Each structure stands twice: as structure tokens, then as C-alpha cells.
Length: 413
Image (cartoon, rainbow, N blue to C red; front, side, top):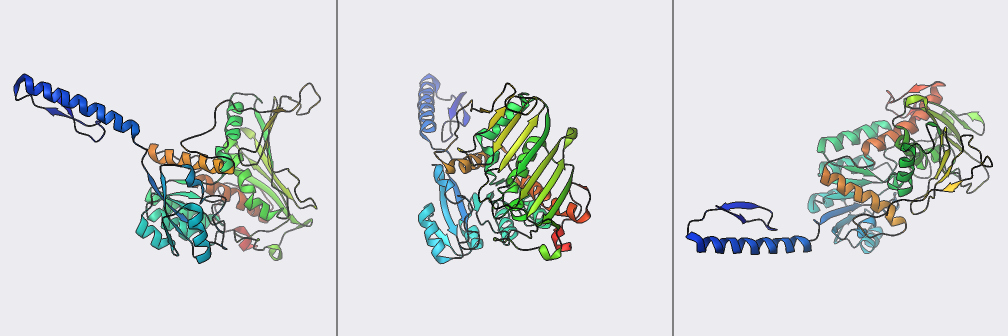
């Protein structure tokens, strides 16, 4: 018997009976070797599997998020099969921008006809989010999803159920999760470079959106970073005010984009984690237009790390190797350097790289059948932390997490 190659790339083998004597055997062996070499050459020259991508946007209604439509150009094995946008002018521009082969006004029609492997759901506005995610998941598409995840926990639960029911992967567009700086900081913490974590502090952007809108739009990044370094929070205690007074029903409003109800222009929230570690989120209105405090500071018993919330390649973090947490005590702030090359199975520069790192991780999650670095569960936890702030304010008490009440507490003031 002789093994004979039968696969496209010489990777499948079968038994070949030697029925015609030595000459036949030699011919079969020679054919086998030739086929194997040809197969190896074909394998070396072959491109990775080409994925088909559909893009869902809505011009004037959340648009396409922060680059969720253009990131696919970084991958030479990806084909943008189609784009959908209810706005005709926006749809035409999206085709030009993304190189999509086809365009649809209705994303349901796009999903049915194109059957993409992956879908980017770009609109920042959340009033269509549940329907879009449910449709994409039901079509069997893996999803790259703009943040925040949902308006409230009831919507979040519906989407998680649809995602799990259909067995698809979801990557949230929390770009900090795959920032090489963020990953480097985590390795430093795990190596004990600032000792045992004592507390974590984060602040929003504190621009014109300070308070409630800052908590939802930008605080989602801070909450996600807290969980990335500390795990799931156990409880929350928060205080929300507007111009110094306690918020009431009259203070509840819709922000500049429909991302759920908000209230207050000052928020102070404390979250408790395992091992007695607490984290703090703050956002307060002021006359400053860009105070540059947006970021996370991690305090250990041997030092401090400051991590600005900026999209890679920006966001240079710093370490202060001082147990007293103060410069001028023999230590000064040092820039944290990357120790390994940055990249992946893509070609990207600037802001596109932040999304490309996330999409590359999504591809790997699908191929290796593992969770993406920022899954739908991570997205739901940010909603949990954000909405729990208002639950604590309403109760004027510490509230356990996860919340038992899934309806947004601002609807119940």
C-alpha cells in the first residue's frame, strides 16, 4: 500500500493499492511526490480565506461610528460585499469610501441577499441597536459593534440572548481594550511593578457633556478599563447632582444623541471589587473646554500608573515608582515603553490601527472559537455600571451588582 495525496493542497491522504508491480509503484510514488510538492507550493502561495463583510450605517442617525466602516480595508483577505444606509446620499458616499460592491437601503435585505460572514454595526445612536444586532445575529453574522452597547439593561439582555442563541461572536469597539499600551500596563501590573493595587480612579472628558452624557459616551471606556484590570464590580455607591442639587424627574433628558436617558452635570461613583479594591469615576461640569483629565490612574502600594484614554498610537502611559504616590521623593514620572512589536494580519496606520487590532482579534476569536477581547458580555457590563449609578442615587444607598432591576432607573424617578 502507498499513501497518495488527494487534497487540494496535498493535505488529505488515502491508501493506494500496489496492484501492478514495481513499475506501477514507482509511478505512483513519483506522482505522489510531484503532487505533494505542487500542493506545498500552492499552500505557500495561497491567500488566507476571504471573509465577506456587510456594513450597516445610517447617515444622520448615528452614521457609521468611529471608523467601523473603513477598518476592513486594512485586511487584504476581506471583501466588503455591501453597505446599507437608509439615506441615499450617505449610502453613495459610503460605497465610495468603503469600496463596497453593492448598496442597500434596507439592512435586512442586505443580510438576506449577501449573507456576509461579518457585519459592522456602526450607528452610535441606540434607538435601532436591538433590531440591528438581532437581525445580524439571526443571519449568523459575527459582529463588530460600536459602543455603547445599549440604552438600558433590558435592551442589553435581549441582544445577549440573541447573540448566544445564534452562536455568533461580537467585538465591541472599545479601542482601549487592544491598545498595546493598555496590554503593556496590564503585564506590568501582573509582574508587580506597582505592587498590590490599592485603588483605581477614572475621569470622563468633562467637556460640555460633563455629568450624565459624559458617563454614557466616554465613561463607558473608563468602566471597561476598570473591569479589564480589576474584574467584575460587586456593588456601587454614587451621587448625582445638577448645579449642586440632587437630581429629580425634571432633570432627566435625552442627550445630543439618543443613547438613553441622562441626568446631572456632576457624578461621583465608587465601585467595589474583589480583595477590597475600590474604583472611582468622576465627571463635573466646568468652564474648561478640554481639561485633558480623561483617563485612568491605577494606584499600587509601590507606585502609580497613569493611562490617558486616547486611541492608539496616542495614549502614552506613565509610571511613578513611588509608594508615596508623589514626585520629588526620589522618583519622577517615566514614560512606559512598549517591549514588543505592534501589528497583526493587516496593514494600518494611525487611528485605523486601533480598530484593526480589534477586528484582527475578532477574526482570531472566530477561527479559534474563543471569546473576543471585548465581547457582548463586556459591553453589557459597561451598561450595568453606568445605569447602576442612577440606581444608587435613587436609593441613596449602596447597590449590589448585577442589578435586579433591568429597566433604566431614570424612567422611575
